[in-house]
Image (cartoon, rainbow, N blue to C red; front, side, top):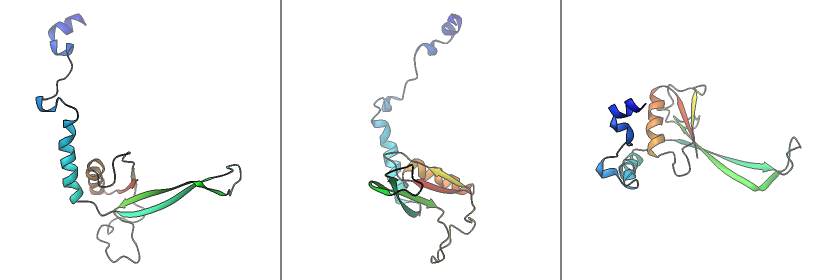
Length: 135
């Protein structure tokens, strides 16, 4: 190992970021700008809201819902599921309800229109999958 370290001195020091990115807070500025650009070109999701509750006594099969533990989960679906009342089936033409789904959980600070999920969802759509973002 000593011979290897003598021949490659770069192994003794870690990687160095570019001079303009030495501050970790500044590294987020390009991503924030790109997020704003992509937010203006947002994806047209179909939103589904699910109200979930907890049970008071979980040992009973059909237990009584506990109102204290009530929450809402939002699912954003792209391309939208076909709706009989909706005339705009542009995105759903080649996507039947049996289309495979990729589920995304973007994290605490991200949302459906945020850059990481936005660009990945466009790629997944191009491969023929439906995306569901859990908010």
